Amino acid sequence: MSTPQKKHYDLVIVGGGIVGLAHALAAGRQGLRAAVFERHEKPRGASARNFGMLWPIGQNHGLVRARALRSLETWRELFAGAGIWSDPCGSLLLARREEELAVLSEFLPTSAQEGYDCVLLSPAEVATVAPGVRQEGLLGALHSRQEILVNPAQALSRLTAFLREHHDTSFYFGTEVHQAEAPSIETTAGKFHADRALICSGTDFETLFPATFRESGITRCKLQMMKTAPQPAAWKLGAMVTDGLTFRRYQAFRDCPSYPLLQKRILAEHEELDLLGITVLAAQNGDAEVILGDSHHYAWAPPEGADPGIDEKIIGYLRGLVELPRPDISERWSAVYSSHPQHAEMILDPADSTRIVLATGGNGLTTSFALAEETLSNW
Image (cartoon, rainbow, N blue to C red; front, side, top):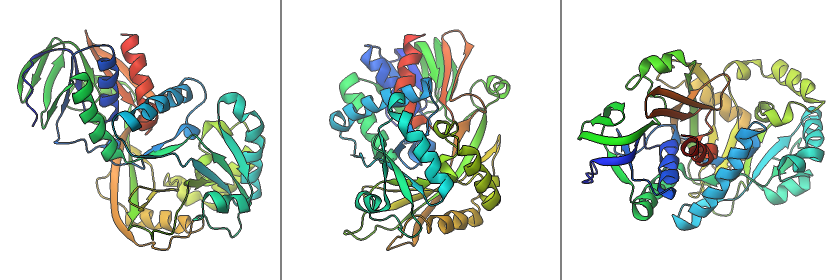
């Protein structure tokens, strides 16, 4: 456990995941003395257990997408400043059916006006960008060049070190917060004082302000993910890859004239996958492993154990998208993030000078830096 000597802070942040760290960065840039309290020895929630996709293509129009693009600017500063590994490989939305290609083609003409950076590729061009994509039956793909891949655990670790060094942020790992109504902060490391307190507790809805969470309409979403052993050095996936099973869920494509046909076909052919909330994406990390997933189970208390059948359905679908030289799975895991049916973020004020801020819907890595700037500028 870290044991800084300060006992009074301008801002105390509960939670050391990406939302908490983003607020610590925003506070540091404003010259505030901030402390982050994390109950585990290192973050181990959804912030550390995801694809690592910085994913503007999947965000809703308007405010949330603008957050994604502003957050990307901060990420790019941190890649160099904090030594965070990144791969600006972009994403490929594959079309293997006519409805998929039609939706992507209809999206493209106005995409630049909305701030997207996309081109439509032929199958031959896809092979150049992403040699790992299976060519059989491929009609084309939308190449979005804004998406960036990071290693979540490494990014959180490097960002923590950067905050310590450059903004004098204090960290208390292995420390649980029992009471966080500023100015009094009671923890397992003793009592602290803070002008303001931020609760960025991920899916811990029970420890602090449980009644507020119960009344908010928030719930949890459990996902299942996997990764392969390292692929051969000569083989590259080349981009983050998905197809219509997944991109039909993105708001950006729902106004396309062919979208109803795509949705109807997916529901007719993949009803079981839809009921299980399965989306299929793949990305190759810096260790040459391919990360794949995922599923979505929404509940206040989702089941703890993994469902092997869901993993097999994800693997089976992925075989139609990419051809892996080494397809054996080396690791499987689950993660849980907060979710809300209407909101991409949860901002609540349960007490004077205390605020709850959560990024919901699994968009924390993509949007948190801009969300944090908004939180502190409006509080």
